[in-house]
Length: 264
Image 1 (spheres, rainbow, N blue to C red):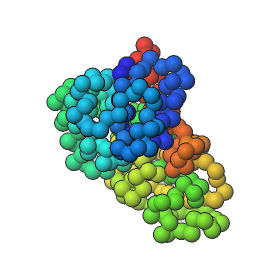
Image 2: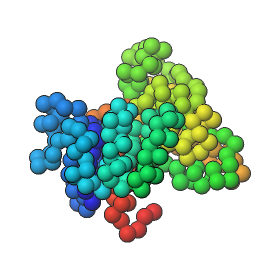
Image 3: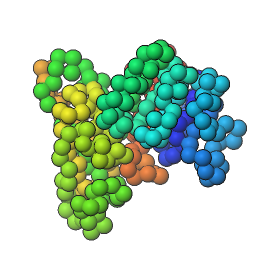
């Protein structure tokens, strides 16, 4: 399978390394990133550096994998969906913009391509989406991370992250608000919302806790199906504490599904 990566930061670099370790039946045929000498030097030898979406068609990718943020989606997604049968979009916080989701859906339908949304840092998305068939009354998603994971976010204006001594809830609101304000930390809440009751009805709570060293997610849902509760404790990505290792692993699994004879 011919892969193109949009973004070559902590997540996609980890995905590429894991695919190589697992001898996955894939070939990286292009990588797009911000054009700097450092980024060009980080691209694996022999893999073309893409500077323009116009280059995608010639590469004939089977799958385009994005993990680079909203600006990259705006720049690359339309051409990617025209050039490839499928595109994985990991920067799901971009879908807080309903117009973007509608536009990309229309483009995918026009070209017969598909948009894949990875489960990212969470799990049980299949159960949540299945439960939503009968309707859900409520869905809550709580995120607990150590203070260092909230650095560089609006939480810095609300808390003394370096001197925090107690577990503190600093945000309570909708998934749309959470992912808009904290696009790197609250990406997963958009996945929960899309699988369940939507961005405005999904309730989110964010917590900074100096006693934890890992990234935690607790999702609860109630509806006609019964009640669901899932708790995850994810090791952070070694090169980016805002993201979980599971985020990269979910991309690897989704990529490998495209070549697997059995899909669980």
